[in-house]
Image 1 (cartoon, helix red, strand yellow):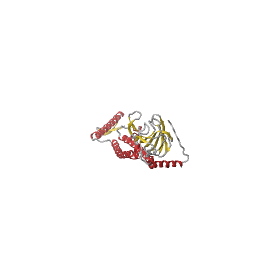
Image 2 (image 1 turned 90 degrees about the vertical axis):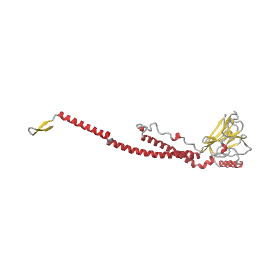
Image 3 (image 1 turned 135 degrees about the vertical axis):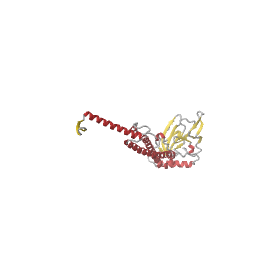
Image 4 (image 1 turned 60 degrees about the vertical axis):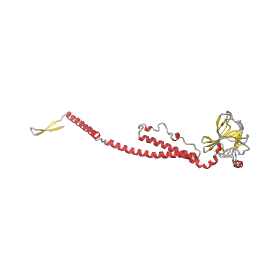
Length: 334
């Protein structure tokens, strides 16, 4: 590289050769100066004036937009969650209660789905991150909404056969209400145990009568169990009537139904006896509602007309006679 310098004596420009070392040194000084000026500029821009760099400003603006979207989403989730809570309360306290359906436990409503790595894509986010918390909340509400939807499907299925509810409720006595044939010896409630003398809750009603007295289903349902308990109920039949109701007929002499058999109100299910742990021949009758034993006297009236009851049984027998190839079962255990 050539450099022209003015000679003051001759007033002529003379050529002066510039060394490579000098060129490199000047270049390095120029780069160092530029870097120093850049650092100074950044320091003044950010520290003195408190302003963000263009890239930082863009990122902050983008973050602000996402924060606003997340905040709006959470506001909507607040409303959805409030509405879902109201639906859950209405479902448990009204709909499921009306049809005798058990409430859905909160552990089921909030149960997780998927595998252990379901949230692995959130591992890089801090626990306080609003995006992470919103995603987890959205997923939880989605799961609870699914459970509530399935619950409404169950309620709808039951409601479609709500007309059957009247015939399923155990609303008549389990025997023909003829006062000359039975005696109410022990009502529902606490009493002295006939074997131990200790005070104990009697979970049903005892109707003393001679062995062989017909015992009838008190409502439509399905025979859930036909069992024998030597130290307890003896020959025993349990019927599931649906809508939260079940009945039990104990200390029978004979049983004329089998498990899984569909029965209707007025169907004979056995005959009274003294099987199992019994101090005398009688029928022990229980009513369950939603898994709890309740007073059977709240569901039937022993003052019901004998003729009316017999007419119901005869009407049911006529229906069965019209059913082709009906099989009869008799089970006796002692």
